Length: 384
Image 1 (cartoon, rainbow, N blue to C red):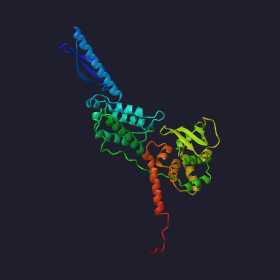
Image 2 (image 1 turned 120 degrees about the horizontal axis):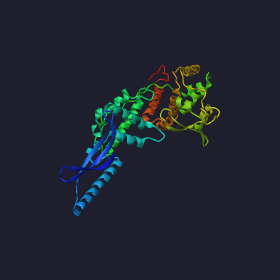
Image 3 (image 1 turned 180 degrees about the horizontal axis):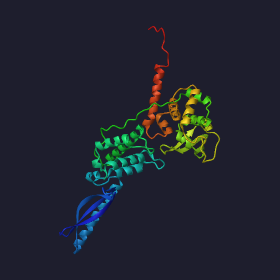
Image 4 (image 1 turned 90 degrees about the vertical axis):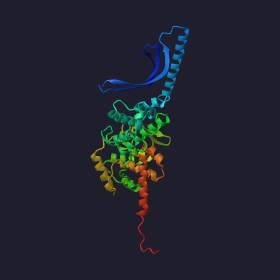
């Protein structure tokens, strides 16, 4: 938003009215042409149209100084995120412009992150329903409900799939954070999203291996040795197939007495610093050239690899419906079982929302309940 001091001659009165013009950006008009969005603040300050005397000239000089002083003050207020002088002017500010500014401030330089993704979906939502943009004073409960419904029913990933429930919850959470910031900045006086529930994260069954099952698979031969090394590597590091697949030797570093991989997650583009065990390093095999993929023998994931993985599991005596992603689930559950706290695990998995990681804690709690209620045989001949 920018501010300009403007003048307007008042009929035959011989006076010139001074006012401020707020330029709030542009939107496409109904005819497809770009339309400028402006607000006006009249200062009730006037100049003599044709000053003749020294007094009239001095009057004009002081009035212009005062008007420019007000303009400078407004520019400072805008720079500080206040977007105007009073609630009326603030309320007329375009929400999307404010959200874009917040997203740019919050987004990490090495990560597209949830802010950038939320901005993309918010821009699409507003563009489809509010062709001339939407101001803060127009945001109400219906707008908030609408964005929630949009995330559930219309928004899609880059591959055209609908958003996962965890993504819906994350994006709506960023929208709420922006509203709270607007309240703090004095742009909104009440929360328009109050009473609108956040999208629920739907927990799907996650197949994982116990340590004994993982041990059994490690001891069992697999007809695709690279798949075996890659899957066990995922179980010990938590990396997704996409990250294992694209991992290069240039991303593998010796760090102190151990090893670290530094890579960008394929899914989130977030930069990850991941310390790995010596055993995980051994599963990677012999060091290659910096640009060479670690698991180069596997070109892509396919139905064939899924069959080989399940065949290998059955050979190890495991009947669970395993996928490669079960390795990531295995890593998460085993970490929690061995004392890793939920916040540290969230960082290890590269999750952007703690609610997603908390699902693994629920899995572990269920396992513990089953251990208490089902794994100890009933006593026979009990006499109390």
